[in-house]
Image (cartoon, rainbow, N blue to C red; front, side):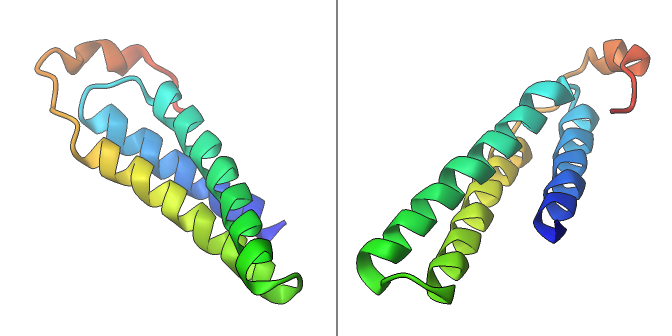
Length: 94
């Protein structure tokens, strides 16, 4: 449950950062959730493969999720600011 709350907060943060730069937030929110899940699964699989099952597998999954979020954060932070970002004023705060 805590992981879902953290993902929700991080997704809102990514959306706000994308919106600040004049981009639509929805795509980057989706990308955050997608990367979180994909990299969490990859982390868990690598943990099982190299370290065995147990708590260490969950820790590897969390590290993978953080890596996925970090990649999206890096992508959004490198976005160029659009000069015509007035269209986002009408976008609802999701």
